[in-house]
View 1 (spheres, helix red, strand yellow):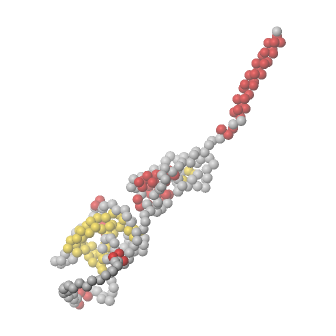
View 2 (view 1 turned 90 degrees about the horizontal axis):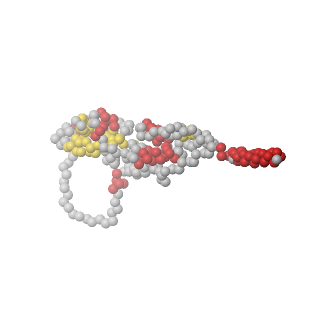
View 3 (view 1 turned 60 degrees about the vertical axis):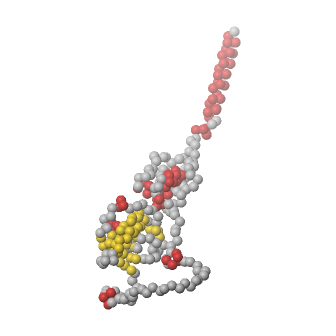
Length: 267
């Protein structure tokens, strides 16, 4: 009887040992489950992004300076990340600022909201130096029409007109006009210009409130082909020939630009 009891106790101990052992083997046979996995790469939200005329890093700097963009909470660099690339937006490593999908989405959101418009790449409009090229027409037939010739009054000059003027000098036409109760000298008349230009320094000196400027973000093409950013446009009454009886007040729509020049206005 004692031998039977001892045999049963030994059998129960062996069964208990077999039940506990597989749990330990199962835990040790899957060490890879304890290795942290990389965070999946974030996919872009838009299928098409607006072309920019500068880098996204510059767009990030401008967005932070104008307080329309804020950087997210800093995230630690993921394991096994490419440490040769760094992101100014997330302030960690693993991808570059230009490849950052989150930053691309943020900049695209701001552009669709009307922000950062001066970073949008726009097609350059053709520049015409000769005004006759813009009015070129093909003449197919010519019909002679008889009409009475109108005699025009003769235009003569006296020596008083040449005072202080060299007749052999091919100078540009520079006049003076009256705007905002002020005489504006050094006003260049250029018939080949496609717009009437009001320079920013002249605008400030005349004391015109900046709030009267109407927003206008299209750039202009300068004389040497460079793009000049505009600050807006404004319509001002301009008086010509203000010293005599032939004075005329003409409303002129000026495009206000910030550029270095020796003239005050370009008509």
